[in-house]
Amino acid sequence: MTNDTTHRLFAATVLPYLDDALALARWLTGNATDAEDVTQEACLRALRALERGPAENSRAWLLAITRNTAFTWLARNRPKTVVLTADPEAVVSAVEELSQAPDAALIAAADAASVEAALLELPLPFREVLVMREMSGLSYRDIAAATGVPIGTIMSCLARARRLMLVALKGRME
Image 1: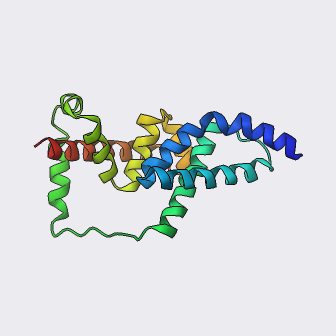
Image 2: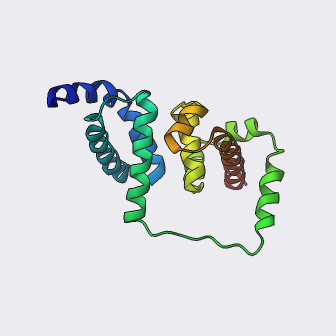
């Protein structure tokens, strides 16, 4: 493939979804500057990949590249953290208890800053699927393709992510 063809393919395949890639990178890294670095690296990876041919679903393909790039970047630039709890069952029961709460009323009462802070508190796997679904509007199938995870797992991960968001929002509102 010629450079001109690759550049035209890049403009048609990547550029329309660049804002989505940047938003995903921002939510995964939690920092706009880091997100720009991740997005730039993802674009370079996408350009190299386009030399082998076009992608079927450009948006999901670019978000998968962005996701993988973000994880690589995070592993290289951020220390891994471990959260220990003496009673993991208490966490599970608290999440289940809150899942019975009136979700819509709680979310409607939360302001944007609280929602953003609660989202950033989510573990990375939950945050990424929630952002891909609720903010980027990807279908379950597209999220599964982007993450390499079965659709059923995506659905259960989204349910858990939403419950954890409710826990975080309720804690902020109290």
